[in-house]
Amino acid sequence: MLSGSPDRFSNPLKIKLSDYNTYSVENLTSIPSGNVEEMLESYYEGNESKTLAENASNIFSSRSHTIFQIQLSSFDSKFPNLVSKSVLNIVDLAGSEWL
Image 1 (tube, rainbow, N blue to C red):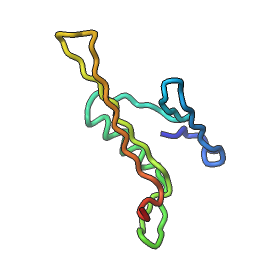
Image 2: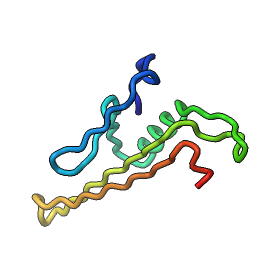
Image 3: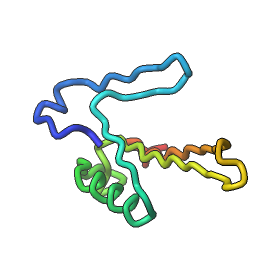
């Protein structure tokens, strides 16, 4: 989620590429979730802050880009040092109803 700064719209977001070819965005928050209900609560909270406006295709068109990232880690009790990790990115681009 974007920080609650009142000038968040006047300052462009800074996207950085790490040495490990992963991207990060300044002023975003990562919210750990212990279960699906907590994850959905974070999703709905972020969705409430999106900007909507009418256009020719959609009366409730999103004017905000959204990236909802789910990171999963799986552990095996037989191999405690072995961790499987997966990342799922769900992306909603503002104005994407034209695509």
